[in-house]
Image (cartoon, rainbow, N blue to C red):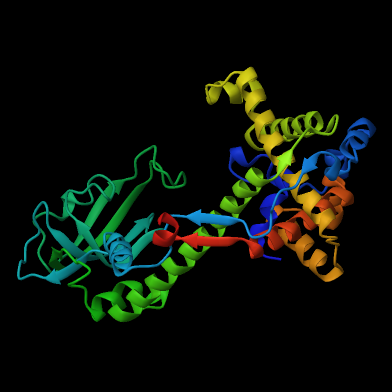
Length: 378
């Protein structure tokens, strides 16, 4: 079962608006224990076919106007964005450091005569006047000559990000290796040597290897987008051809209640924030929030009912091997300690329902007639 199918287990990611799933990690059962009232409400059973009228869900025509092919222009644009992070330099004949120069240096930082962590480097290119180093470092090199070693007595600022070094007096011994000129490297002018110097850690040593690697990465990204977009488009089409006539009593209210409870728990445990403070921070009233959550959960419930009705009609069952793989995927992606933690949170019946729905969605997707790009536009 592909990871993308886990999206239908919406309850696992009920707090996605906060930046990701985070409701299943706790190992203390007291923290995840539900009241008997909640458990009973959560286990409300209904026959989806009593509430759903199924349309022609096989052979649906779905059109996406986006083109998911990787072009040479895509590769060029991506590489040019990478080049900005890897400037190139060429040696110059200049011998004395001035403000604005790019200097290649070795340096060692000492505190009480002992080298401190992060204070030593070789072959670093520094732009004098850029403010990249602490105050006094760059200005202290002005006037030095290539080959000189300069000792700089400096003090780290009180608000320095490394609190251990904040406010500490240190000595930097800096050797001026050479003064260099910055070269504007482009897609068309980059060389194998440049690629080897800057991208070897990524596995690229030639221009062609870099181009091929970036093209492969873009292809994987576009394929992922294509799968996600197709899934969403098929779901939208499915809602057009099938009709949810009504909702089973109590289910929507319970889903909304559980969603809000999960949000309140995550806000408190992960952000030390009350719901009221959260709503203030996003400039939203309780009424607006309740409406938004109810609409979201209703849409999710309606899609769940449609897929359940399809699974029932197609006699889709829970196969042991596929179900085990699905559980492993949900447990891993949802951050659950083990299967018991997942079942404690959602119950086996519900998890199996969503698994069957995922299989129903697979069947609908495989039978859909999907067109992309220019063909879809036509």
